[in-house]
Structure formats: structure tokens, C-alpha cells
Length: 379
Image (cartoon, rainbow, N blue to C red; front, side, top):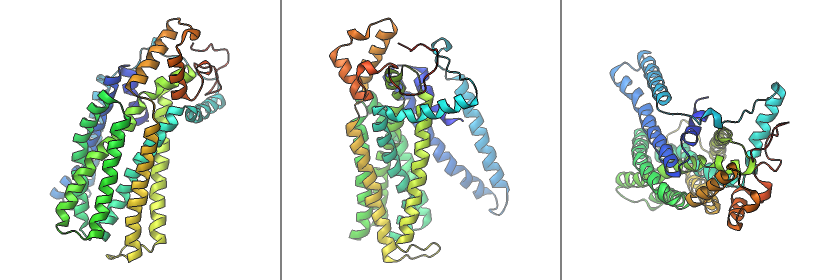
């Protein structure tokens, strides 16, 4: 109820490409700070209070609540939505029609070519990161035989690096678009995974410092992998408006969140299945050789493999700063009374690349999404 409307705010607040990119980037950077605080606050209270006491748990929950309420108040007074005059009423008649509209619109998002490409970047990029996070503890503890506290330290170090790399990728995307930065970020993650596994197989000395170096490198790439798909998201509604003639940014936020949760649950489930098949036993300090090799295999074939699939989808992405400017200009032309017949061959080709539909089939002249009775099209 909070995250889906919150994710749409950059789209509502401005139409400018750079401003949306910076808004999404600042959101991601504050998210990194929040992740760091979420991990640090319980540790602080447990340091001062007895671990068997309920007090640190209560104070942790109270602190989280205060931070959340303060953040929501600041958000309310420092953000805004699109003017109500620009919002089209899409009310439905009755529960069943509303239910029908919800699922018709939700599944219609997959008809937009750019969204399908973007979903590939998002799910396989994030999926690789989620699988890595789920596997990393096993790798450090059982493969490299390091203490669990070392895992926590490396995760904290990675979070700090992600904060700075998010700022870098934010500025890069504002100037150059999304494709190349995302590919570079993914390649950094892939090279880091290869480095981690290489440390195990090559039995390299000075392991701790080497792992620290790889973790810093990994964190620099991870910041971009987490940031860029959500930066692309804020421009999807403009492409969808070309296709449907409607503003559906909230719908795309919901579709992304839903797909992301399904992917995260899937990768964690698959990890558990794979490890159990190769003889992993919880509760013991030393795993069998097959279980250790399975962990390495998940890192290489699972994490790196999914990341490379994310690169494949990013190469197919046609939405960038220039193409967004062109479709925005075309939307404004039509809203001011321009004729579709006057569209240039270049814009017709671009619309086909971004939507997957011919120009004349766009702007609501199709069966994409819920159709309202007795309502004129947007164009």
C-alpha cells in the first residue's frame, strides 16, 4: 500500500527525463541508507541491553516506527501529484467490473514490448542479486570457512559501496540512458562472482583482503543493477500512453512489484531444492564435497547465468533519453489537436519499436487493456 504509490511519484512530479532520473536515484540512495540503519539499529540496542530481554526488540520496533512516520510526513510535504484536471476518471460500476478491470489491465501490461524487455532486465538482474544474497552466506561459511560475522561485515561494506555507485549510475543514466550503464553494472557483478569462486578453486593466499576487494567491486556494480530498472520504470507509462491513450503508471508499479516477489520466492525455493539434492545438511559445520560444489555451481551458473540473461534483454531495450523525448513530443502534438496522418516515418518506426504495434494501432485503437463503455478515446 505504500511502495506502489510511492514508486509512481517521480512520474507524477515531472515530465523531464533528467529530473525523473535524479528523483529515482535519490530514492534509491535513501533506500541504501535505510537498509544500513535497519541492520545497525538492532545491533546497537542489543549491545546496551541483555540479549534475553524484550527491551531491545521493543526499542527496535519503536525506532523503526518513528523513522517510518517521520519519512512519510516529510514525503507528504515535499512531493506532489499530477494536477487533478489532467487525471481521467476511470471509475467502474460494481465489484465485478472493477475486478475485471484490475486483471484485464494487469495482464495487458505484458502486451507492451518495452515492458517485456524491461521486465527481463529487472527480473534477471534483480534475480541474480537475490540469488547471490541467498547463496553468499553459504559460500563464505562452508566454502571459504569464514565466520558468519564476516558475512555481515561484507554485506555492510557492499551496502556502503552501493550508496556511492548509485549516485554514479544516476548521473551516468541522466546523460547517456540506461543500456550501457546496466550492461557495465551486470558485467561487474558477473566478474565479481567469478572472482569469489576463483578464490575458492585457486586456493589463493591472503583470502580476507582479496574477498574485501571483490566485495567492494561487487557493491559498485550492484548499486547500478538495483537502481537502473527502477529508473527505466518511470518512463514506461509514457510509452504505454502511446499504446493505450491512458495513464497507467500505478499499474506498471504493481506489475513490477508482483513479478519481483514471484521471482524472489522462486530463486530462493530453487536454491533450497538444488542444495538438498546435492547433499547439503543444515546444522553441521562442514558440508560434503558435492554440497560445496553445488554452492559454487549456483554462484556461477545461477547468479552469473541470470545476470547474462539480463544483459540480453538490456541489449534489446530501445527506450532511452532520445526516444523518450521523441514520443513525448508526439504525444504533446496529438493532444494539441495534431493529426495522426501527419506523423513522420521516423516516429512511426519508433512507435513500432517501443510498443510492438503499428502506429495506427496505437493511442487506444487496439484491444490492449480494459475498455470503458461510452467513453471516448484519449486521442
